[in-house]
Figure 1 (cartoon, rainbow, N blue to C red):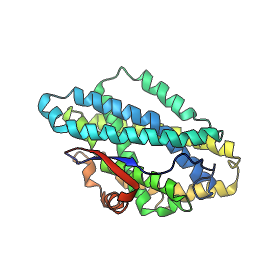
Figure 2: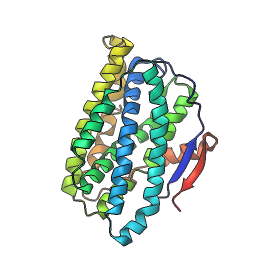
Figure 3: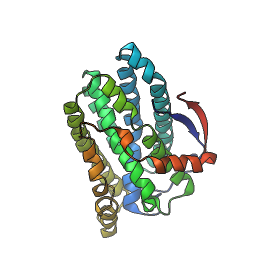
Figure 4: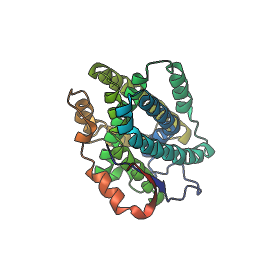
Length: 274
């Protein structure tokens, strides 16, 4: 069982943010804002899926994973609340969150499917977010020039994504989920997630007035598609998920653990999987 900690983030999210809050960079701001726009509806889905998966487990496995799932839900609920506040500032700036509407409709359309499908989709998404989290700690330039309070928000979220990267995967495994469907759901989630974020990023850039600026797409190429960019730099980790003997704990979570240890003054602990 993974030891998870539920934390209350000690940052000011009452003060408004600028449209180009990420170091004045139009693309980085639009892209990370699109990610934030996906979080509240996504994290509610993750909580619902993993709780339903836990409920479907036989008693020995349920008892083994119960405390971890409870802490996982606590972390995700905090992420949902914090990003809802962040997104409220984006809405006040006129950014329209169409991603959330599409995602909610898609979730509802698939609500009837086997619980293992939903847990597999959650595990796949958690793998992607854990990859991105690890990448962010290695690439501080992704948040260069960002206000300290917003850097704290994103790095705290990244650290907890890395911390709970195995919870949904372990529930899926305990449910008897197959490798075939684990791979299928990773491919599906990757495609849908990429399209959702791309569409919302473009909408954000259109609203910002920077969609057709050369500097915008130069920043995009550097952030995402440089040799060690967020996309190209994570290809090997993405493929690793398909290996029969893969487990999320094979990934190095040292940077996130170190950040949490070094920044204990930026949060308080409110719960723990004992």
